[in-house]
Image (tube, rainbow, N blue to C red; front, side, top):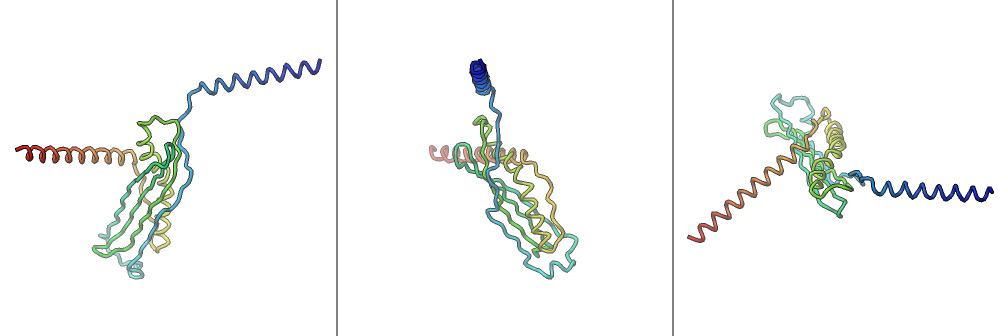
Length: 188
């Protein structure tokens, strides 16, 4: 009798597992993005006019210039390397106070995302994940170079992506117009 009860319980448990598995297989799979690895690909910090640049005699018209660029390349169908390039420099007229250049990378796995949404995800969400780490590296290096820490404002990677797409469209239009002009001159 105990043996029969154990068999029924085992059969019921197996049926419950089968039902649960079939329900799991029918459920929609959520899109996901995973960071597989992050790394400094290249980094430099220069303080070419030290110790003069650290004397506090920097003019009030000194300027800090920050540029950010994103590059990406597929490694497999689901894995992408994304490089966030951050350049930060300060100049007092023509004198370089400091210059920092960082290529901070990551490998991301993107699953269950429609093909047409992968490029925006790679170019917007991946750099958004990398940015706080790159910002910290730049801030620490500037501080360790003898200056106040440089706190880079948050970046709107969505707008950066839109600007890049628009620039590519404009460039493509200009190339097509130039090509059409050459073709029309050739026909004449």
